[in-house]
Length: 188
Image 1 (cartoon, helix red, strand yellow):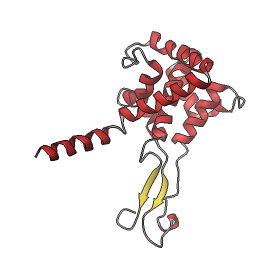
Image 2: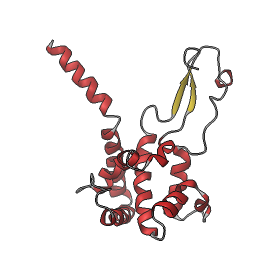
Image 3: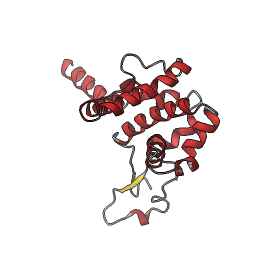
Image 4: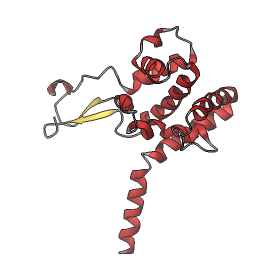
């Protein structure tokens, strides 16, 4: 019985590692890489995170002494508190066909990837925050929603919010089952 309980505990811990803990781990790795390779960018990011934290401390309640890491759960934290608008940006469903002799073409619609997906969100937010690719990001759903609906007239708050989403979505991209959908005859 003791061996079963230990095994079950390990299984539960490993399953949980792909949610909050997974996000925290990915953000911690990113922070360590920035610390070692681009401390100025980390300092700028931390400064940008302060804006929303000061404006709305309830929204950023999970952020303490390690805001870059702790904000990694932000997009999930807000999902059921007015943040459902961004639910489609947490994943992208590339088809994984698990049926011998078949391809995505055998499952109509399996290869349709919605425009609002994690790759689009990461690209749009990166373009916005970096300013490197002109102003095309201003046509994106992500920019429009955050800048014009959530924080009209408060560019710094919008950017602070967007940075939190970016940190979260990069974590999602590294999570199992956030990038594929399984198709076979039993589950078409």
